[in-house]
Image 1 (cartoon, rainbow, N blue to C red):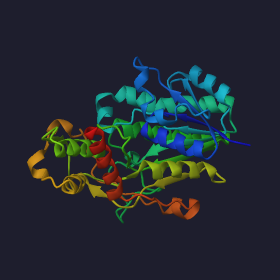
Image 2: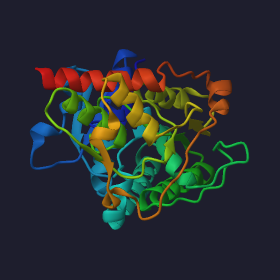
Image 3: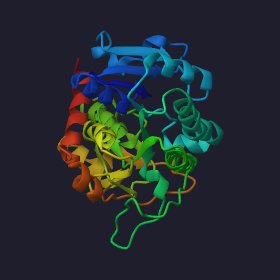
Length: 326
């Protein structure tokens, strides 16, 4: 029997790649959209398979429990992937209450709906490396046992979601797994995230459409992987025979400055001529370094990333070169 999956945040970067993967595997995929006034822009990441008969979309909101109950009653999913959130860390400082409501309480609403409507469904919760904050183990890595000490409203909300998922798993026997994903990018990443911001602006500079790129803290280091690799990890987590929590990362970190240098040099551009920093783009409390140890996931689930940091950035730069050359 073909499985049915429900994806919250299906029109985001991860949701769109996950929907593609699940449809390829024969799933019927239901997606939740949050209604906005320009409906035409809501599905651009999934437009290429929008008319697939195995894709079904419904309006709902993580802050509206009744809408979640309605969709669960209609879809009757075997698997649920909770990817919806206010996911921009810097913006979470500007909208801390909204971020906490959607990213934190929204998860609790979904779990309550699952408990009431489809308690046998398997649930994946999109947890984040931002939960660790600046806590790093002695070997320089962060893993499932690293203490969590978030340094942003987004990270705090994700810690609540992580813990309430564990609580519902232990209290009610629900199959709920956390994927603690480190940064993951792609051409579908929002262009206000640093990787795509750099790729997009560098392509514009190369084509003579811009002449400068303004960034925040370029000394911060991150463990960047490709979203395509990471949605495969999400799926593997829910195929495991028991609910558990897994770090997903590449184990290799790079600074924002390395990111800038790599992209600009790949286009034969001098970053010193075009790149500057602005204090307004710094976080009120900085997260300095992230590097994940995903040995548990590799050993238990057999997951391996396909993309390298460089091949990922090459793809993102080429996307923008093609986009602006049309």
